[in-house]
Image 1: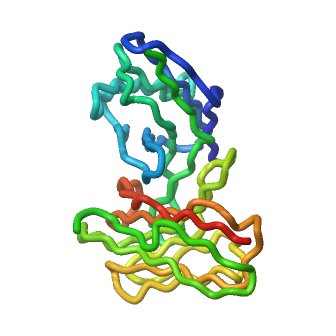
Image 2 (image 1 turned 60 degrees about the vertical axis):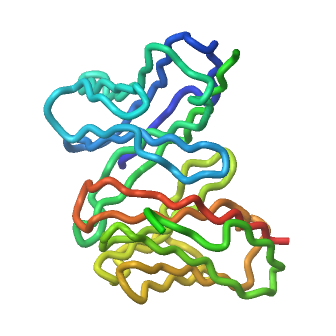
Length: 116
Length: 113
């Protein structure tokens, strides 16, 4: 069965420090991978996605993620965190649903706190 | 309006009430989704509509009843809910077909007393 694991429930980093959020997936075929961010009281916004090709993908707000098939991982990184990055981050794998409509399977999320 | 909108943003209801959540997408998509987001749990997919036809129902109790009258609108009708149904209900839309990214609305925060 498809699944996504985000091992870190909560992470605190200092503003200006680098960030890495971990994501591991379980999926039988070539995965389609996504990172979403959710600010308090808001819906989810897509940060980046991996479908194929270059395993290092660039997203919005200075985020990037690297797909590593051998490790079944898709970790999210940012070289220098800003206070506005404090939010909840969700990793998701795209799976084939009924009638070929895609569905997303989400991890439990990682809450990022940024210290001044 | 742009993107995906949801109304109301907050809803408090008793267990015997009947209410409806509304979602509208302005992106020209033809697939729409309902998710439930509870504290400390992953997002749970509830229903999927593709081309106005329900294509997925993830063992959701019958007290939740979806309706998709056209490709731009999605409703979730609620009746005789339980306190454990209190959660954030998110609507999303995408182009139909596999692996297209989904765009989310801001959610409706539901509290069942």
